[in-house]
Length: 310
Image 1 (cartoon, helix red, strand yellow):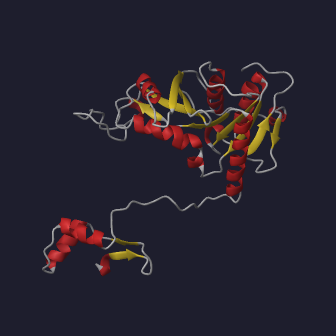
Image 2 (cartoon, rainbow, N blue to C red):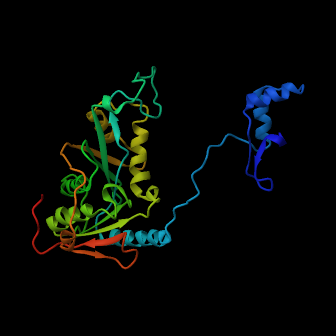
Image 3 (cartoon, rainbow, N blue to C red):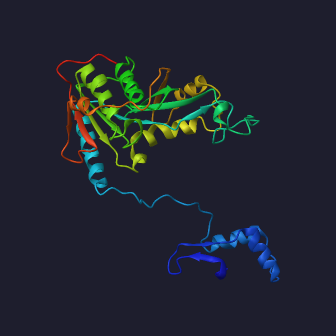
């Protein structure tokens, strides 16, 4: 197999270019008769096995990436120790609602039949699940919208979570820490995200809102990804999302052996896209960037006169 072995000649990273059946045919051509099962066994004895590509090479690392990770860890521990709320937020992948295939498998006697093609025009809606993960109490809250994935939608979901009577209470709710990605509806460059937080959280409830963004390309370290969204995907794997009610019910039915509790609600309001925020309006925000990575870390303080919800 020397001619068909690729990889590092001086290291352990090697692979075979041919398939087992191709190797079997090649050996038969030179008079060596082996089944593909025997060839697999011999390859395994040589240390070969089937492997997929592994995403591990970071090509877009920001020079302040490690500094931001350390800062988020310190701030999070400080807020938890003081009894303040700490939440991780993000928008899960948008889902077409209809008789479409859903990735994964489920135990059943017969597979469910779905459309052979997935055309967006055949969907009854496009679900936008915005998640809020309570880092302290291991609880998830998902708000399912059908409008745009906008800053107004994201902050509306957070505000509704804050107002919920059935959410766990914290010792001191005068401050709130929000952990989120660098892009999307809660991106650090998005002016409307900051304006909505100022209006509908800081001003409305007279609280200080601290926001920490994970660096670009580091969203998988956002706690909501591996503590909430991954388990939702496992729970509805192989189950067609034929209606918003079914999607919402499957989100609610998500649990883990560590005690994760998930609640879900539909938000059917309209959230316009491409909303512009002027320089003059940005100047009215009571926003204080932090000294460490100020583009990603900032605090919104309540203004003297709270503004009414738009």
